[in-house]
Image (cartoon, rainbow over all chains, first blue to last red):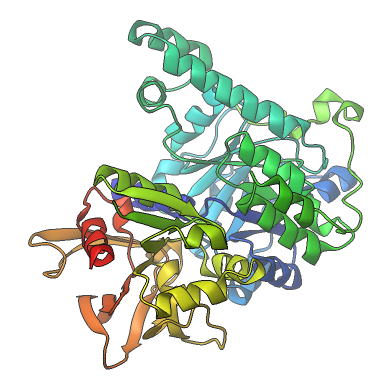
Length: 292
Length: 190
């Protein structure tokens, strides 16, 4: 299983500098691939619609996921509910490339996440801070994404989570060996992983940004804050011109530190998704608070 | 001293740059035509060939790079990089840099559950056995007359060289060995 975990972390490394896009059907998956997405996330409703329509959000129909898998050559990911290990078993059985144990779906367990180390298939999980990221890695996640607040088109939470992660890492790095156990206790994180961050100054897995990215500038902002790549959910297919915006966000992630190119990339994209300000969402409806 | 570029449009760029640093060679991220002029060799890393290929086209890098390779710039494509260098890609019309006389099969082994690690003796590269990491890897289906096979795993060609071009289906940058990077540096010095 050690070798399998290594291979799964390696696949995430191949996605770096890339954009993973939410798609709800074959047509959107092809648009995403043609725009230069490095992977697609197959789901029935994008987060903005889950938020609006409410109800229990579950794993997508395996048939729809298989159709998308057959239509594109890039890796296909799909979401399972937090703690729903049978949904994960089903996705593993259809040979998907990556599972997202996601707070965007309605949690199935209010205490435990899936024991990801028992699966051959790789998992990505959301995190708001270093402790949460290391708990998920401790359970076997081979890739992390900052949670942000999905379906809002408001980037503020993604920024908050990445800044928190970075400042947590700085604290671990500059702490003395003697302080690490206390930090592990405070963060609720496995000691060996705190030690890893202390010694290496980085997470042991790739870290993408997610939740609220709607423009090329948002994507470049997250890259400059130090993430390895971005997930874009509702931001593309809830905008005026999905194909054009998808392509622009891909380009912005490559040239994230070149303002002249970013200016050109950002031109004439049509309307972005309307979005919801995070202050207008009551705290109990924040998806990022799901996950333990 | 020679400078080896790593095409930094998407993919596992940092891993190659780290290896170059380890063997004491200057590495450089390459994203523009200007940067293409400042290097003595280029590594095209693993990633998604569709994404990297599209960025090459959209930022008008395909033609200048194609010309540099034709004029003898040493290049090494790992995984996606192999697909980008190939003259023929099974099951599709679209090719990218049209450089090396090989036919490659994308995702030849299947999805992520079919990714694997193995070891192999590659005399051209090193005397001992080398660890080979295959991630959703391609392999070479067919080669032209002037292409030299460097390694085969099972029935399939997974590493080859033609003049100034080197390709590997697998990812030496993800292992502890640096023999491939040293071999490529040698190519850049010839």
